[in-house]
Length: 368
Length: 239
Image (cartoon, rainbow over all chains, first blue to last red; front, top):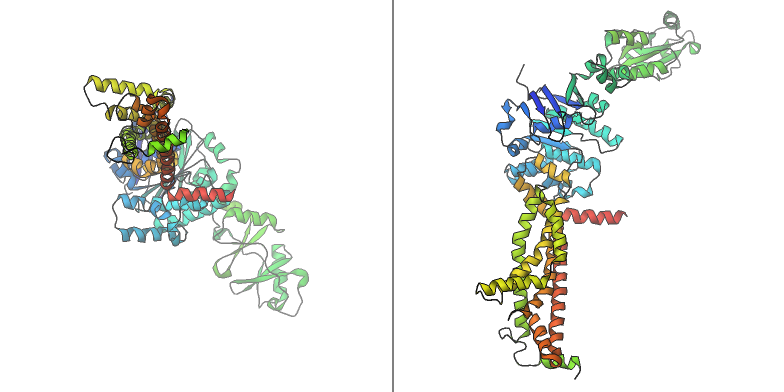
């Protein structure tokens, strides 16, 4: 395995005013390009952990390396210019334009004017803002827009590492959901190593490749992928922090596996009514889906069958409940329980009929 | 003769409009301003750097609050006497420096308090973010804290300067200088015949103080950073 981008080696932080350490003997590796989310109740040391990476807080003992270099050997301000930093309150410079805000680090690094201008335009586009907005001031932007500028500022000098401290905590749920999706899309584009702090488990499970669950006293209880975490929480604390609907959350993270699908009641458009009746009987349904080769055309109901014509020429109804192959099991379960026959059509790209997912199939996938 | 006739006849006396003769009103205005401006500049050089650095490190907050109280309790005349005594003991000319230094001392409290507060009330998130992206402590002070605190610092300078302009006149009691205090003090000494001089000096001091106030207000407005001016404009518009 490659050298981790960030490594905590037995790091402890004690604040003078508290007997209990804020972070206790933490060892943690973050791989290059990985998103690790630190999550836990307030006072669990997650923010302290984050702020030790860019030396806003110095550890009491232990060692932190970024890209293989012990960070205590680099002057703090030099280190920080190579690490993006986004906070909940954003902290844009109110007296600077959006352009000046985003250009803060490139300016510190002494970039030329043209390079800075090009980079600012590029970043505004990347975070989904109009490049012409460079001349505006932070006060003229909405909360969500300001946070996008905050992210653009953090990315300005193309740092390998991005630290985000509850960046979406202060925006409303709709904007938050959009910013979360955008962050994942952004990550697919720029592949930064991201350490993200939140107290919202759903946000952690959505964003993290791995999630680090902290407990009070700065103890790392478990570090695992979201699916592992939900399937086997290390202890009661992690389990309770994950919430009662752990199984449902896990479903949301699992994709639909093709080998768990049943063929289901399906007939080709060219076949006759006898064939249709046969598949319905076999599957115990009063309807069947009608296919054109591999593609789904619609469904036909038993009472509507008129003998003497191929099913494709009969009165077809659209299939109402179906899920896409790239959807998740939670959506599939929802569709299954809301369909009278407890099964749902699964479609691939270009409306290719892949089969039916039933409760049995879903259970089998969970077990596998 | 009414007091206004006395004023008019005083203004018509020889050398009254001279810039170079000690009897001249313009001469005294310039003297008054020299003391005031020098006093303020010295106070700014002492108080502002100290206050912004202390405020940046969140140290010495007690100084800022103590300065307010000292500023209120300070007896201006006593201050002038102390500096005058010290200068005369040391055989230094007592016209300019004792009064000027007393004015510096007078200006320190409001300048210190406002500079300290101005830096202290800058949004902590802005400072945290600037530190987080790699500003050095000096860069945080110069590029973030001072520009954002500037209107408040200038308000301190305005309070200090207006106070100085109004107080310099007292200096005429103890020395040959004292700017526009000269005709006031000399007029009083003459008794009933000196009211014209008293009134002329008084009006001139008041006018100078108001003018200073207006000038600094304009400066303060200009010092509000563009982004914040717009912010308050939109905030008002939203109401």
